Length: 227
View 1: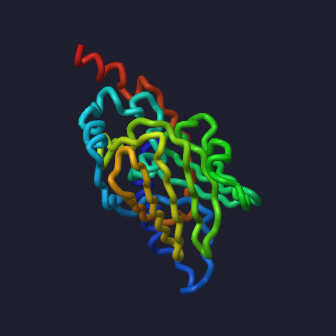
View 2: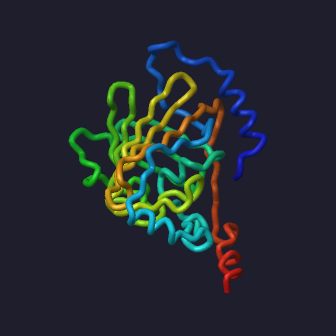
View 3: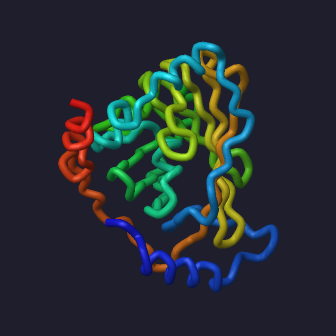
């Protein structure tokens, strides 16, 4: 499903909905949609990173054309489809409408990310994740990602190696949420960089099936142009 007028109406509802009072604990549970353009800061590639990005071909190297999510950052970077967050007794569920990505992240004291199960069973290249709380902030650490392309939208061709380590920080204030993702990858990046996403809560929102298929993504048709 692609969001159009429905998303516009839900955004209006979210803006009109009352916010929690300053200092109140705000639950992350609910459905959220990106409210503004993602911000990528301090992106500085190593020579190896520059070379890897130069080799990127959007018609051949974009995993999305095969209905495969490139990375969690790429999934979050999609501007329209919503995400849903649910806190369970021992885990955090984060469902993304884009590419039907369903993350299951354990909350367990003493559990290292490298020892956690893959957060998305059908896409192990999205890594192993573990969650914890730092005050009111939900923190998710992810390691053991697959090497390949990292972002294919706003900064197409950004690469990632198997050494990529991310730390996501979810902070909600009323019906607004900010997710800041710090990326550390010494192979392709000269220093950590941060991608920040701002969301609005959608009252009555829902996650619908994306149902991507390579045929609909025009994968074969795009490649045939170069033959």
